Image (cartoon, helix red, strand yellow):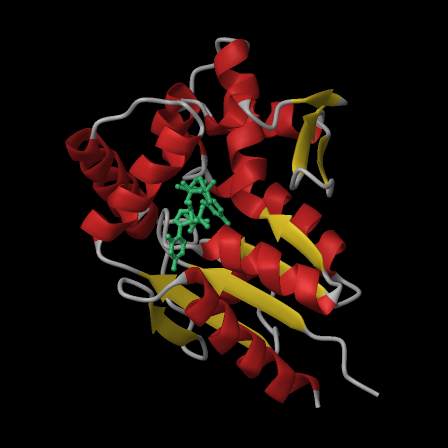
Length: 224
Ligand code: CDP
Ligand code: CDP
């Protein structure tokens, strides 16, 4: 019998985490949890309700009364905020520009981590984010830290936006991603950092298939 494992995938924006995590979860029949979507959802709610994004206490109080659900569907993972679907809304430019500020609040992160631990408690899970290997699935059998050059990551986001019919500027994307990387890596509360026991994968010149194959091989080794 194969062992049920936890897989933690961390790294900066547009490194390919969710694409690979989703694929691995599908192939293994595991649950996929996109923790970035949770931070995006609360940011969306805060913007809609005109909350001061620097007020961590208020944001945490609001989060405590907010339901965020991630539901798999043939179209991909759907995100529900207080029972309303917000899958596309949470990817807006406005949310993207504010999410790192919201995610920097330590108490808000504590509540998010509790929810993520609950989701991951039975194993058979692939979770991606910034602090999964260091603060959430700290005993995960497989930890990956995935990155790529900022230019390549911006190029990927550019192409992705183009496919979704959203026009963006490559230079602006490089700036936005570099700023978010800096905020996520330099914050005090669980910054974006490679866990000591994580395997580093530079995906700059790798295709989705190549990265996926690598991860599946590593996962299978740990499932024996
Ligand atoms: O998809 P993309 O890489 O652009 O970002 P995301 O995974 O949706 O995450 C959005 C933001 O949420 C990140 O830039 C972080 O500020 C925050 N985040 C976090 O702090 N911790 C996590 N575990 C996941 C996301
Ligand atoms: O989750 P994260 O923000 O790390 O990245 P993603 O949303 O999975 O990937 C960003 C974009 O890069 C997607 O459109 C992927 O199809 C693409 N990608 C790629 O071109 N090559 C890879 N090796 C990985 C992802």
